[in-house]
Length: 73
Image 1: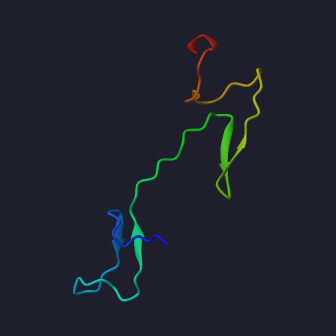
Image 2: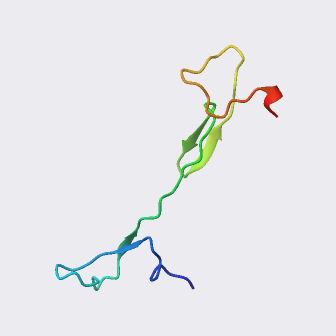
Image 3: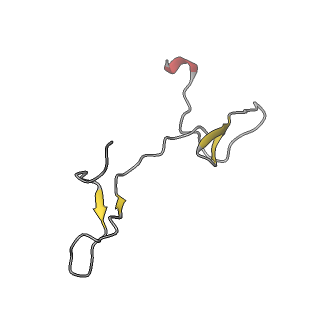
């Protein structure tokens, strides 16, 4: 079984004296990147992607970060 003891992203709770806290708790400080979604999709709880429905007669308020023309392939 793996644990986070030697992980560089482990930020362990410490006592006032600077020693490791007896509870053994800490925080993971690993930066996580959330994938970019097209305007037609959204995140719902639990973290899953929902939507995907589009309409030729509807314009989005912001440009879609995933937009590519058919000739971009």
